Length: 306
Image (cartoon, rainbow, N blue to C red; front, top):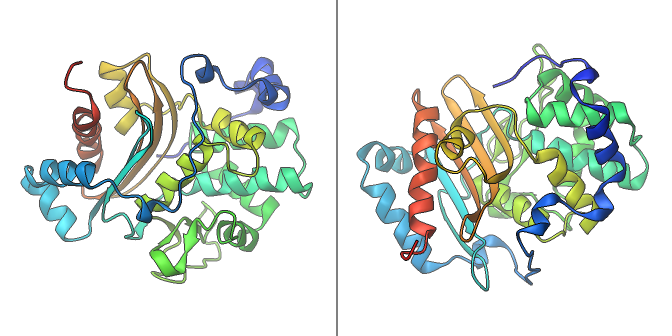
C-alpha cells in the first residue's frame, strides 16, 4: 500500500530532532529488552530443526497454505529472539518473490550507508523523506531517494561483502530495480529478473543485523530502527498485533501490489514476544492470510506456561 508524499509538516519538530540527535542514547525498547550480541553466521547455516518442524506442521494443517507453499506462492521466515540464542526457521526462505514496497527497506539501508560515507546529506528533508518512505510507504519519497542515491549504487551496496543482502549463490535477496513510479527504467535482479524483489531469509537477516547493531555501526543500526519504528499503516501484521498485543513495539515494512502481499516486522513485547517475522503471499486474499500467519507463529514460539 502506498500513499502520496505528504508535506514535511506531518513530521513534528520533535521527531526530526530525535532523528538528528537522539541515536546516541539508544532506542526506547532498550529499557525493556536487553539486546544480546550473538556471533551468528548466515541464517541458512543456523536453522533450528525443532522450530522448522513446528512451523512446517502448522502450515500443512491449512490446505490453502500448504498448496501455496508447494507452488512457491508463499514464503515465511522467523527468528525467535527469546532464550540464550536465536532460533531460525523458514519455508521457501530462499525463493525470490515480487515484494512491492517491502524492498524500500533496502533504500533505507543505502541512504544511511550514504550518510555515513558523506555522499548523501543527512538533512531534515532527507530524514523526513525516509520516514515517509517507511511509515506510510510513500512511492514519491522512495523514488526521490533512488534519484539521490542512484539505483545501481543501492544494489551494489546490497551485494557488498559486509551486507550480502543480495547473494546470487544463495537465492538472491533484496533488490531495487525500478523507481516507484510509472514509465521508468527497469533493471531486474540477476536471478529472476524481478524489479522489486526479496526473499524471506535475507529480510530476516537484515532485521537480525539491525537487532545486533551490525549494520554499519550500532549507532547507524539504531538510526534505521528508529525510522522503522511505529508504522502508520494498520494492516497485515500490524493489524493482527493491534488486536491482541497493542503495547508491543514494532519495527516494520510491508508491501502490496495487486495479489502480491508482503510483510516484515521485528517485535518487542513483554516476557516472550521478541521475534522477527517475514512472510510473502501471492494470492487475492493475501492480506487476510498474513493476519492469520502472525498469531500462528506466535502460538509456536510462546512458552506453554504463558
